[in-house]
Image (spheres, rainbow, N blue to C red):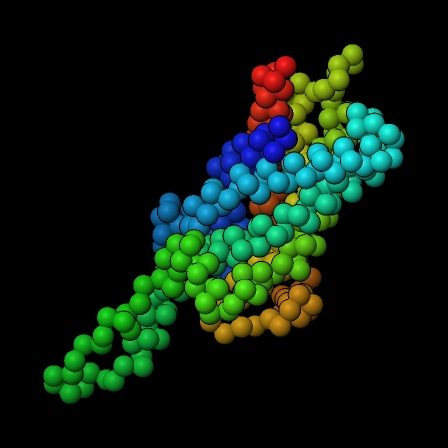
Length: 312
């Protein structure tokens, strides 16, 4: 039931938060974007509304699986820990139990999300400006048109976008960079998701306890909305530094490579842009996280109660 409810909640969350996720990734990976509104304005001017939804199809197809695994892993780990420590799966878990289960959930996600994150970041950072630059570089290698009847450059030199879609992006990365290319930034992703999901589930559990009315075992809808939104904000506050590094490592396959690994990326980013670079997109992450995780948790809880009611 947790797997099904998690899948439904995840899809709803992606539908709400994807445009802001695109803005966040561009701010983190492209120094020319110095603020949220400037990034939004430039993206809309160059690519219109479609620019905010680049790479959406793959997350929509995979997020149900990923979210299902996240919530299902968390619940099953928690049940096993309670059974091992207290002798019953129905025992009330301690906060350390919740933290460990959330951490395990985050680690399991990495195996599924790393390739899709690479494709998403590459597509989100593939702007029209980059495409035009690639075309100019290709044409610059063609002989000058000074002779009176110089032939036109072949169509193969006038390239469109490098990645034509999520599947084409994955295939191109695998062909050019091998299997390691699909798991670029996975070390940063491990640090990001492990700690953030521990924070995510722990803060949600604590807030639900605080917001549960006296005499009830669960909070009402408004309580779930507030707890889910706040849990998402706290999780992204923890995740943002490694999210910046993850995005830079994953975008680093377009053109000349800049980073040799996780530590080199951290050191180079801080040296060039100062410690504040690790918190690029923090405000946007938090603003996006609140409505997205409100929707995720209220949908998750509603689906869970519905399936339990049907199975009774």
